[in-house]
Image (cartoon, rainbow, N blue to C red):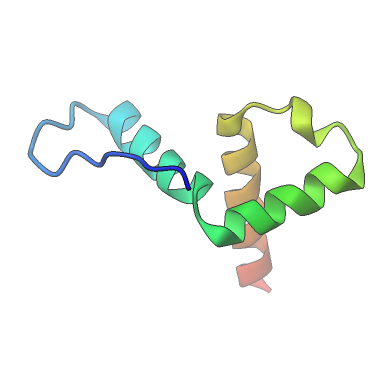
Length: 68
């Protein structure tokens, strides 16, 4: 299992730090892993996307689903 470190003090220096922590938390979640495996097995070139792009796509699709 992967792990990540969240800075709990006031040392966060901006949006980039927040995004990186959030991205890592999402990337190790079971929902993201399941979603990621479905996309990779679909064989549509999804694996060529970097983690940042994958998480953004995951969030977009999740929010679109919730909007319905």
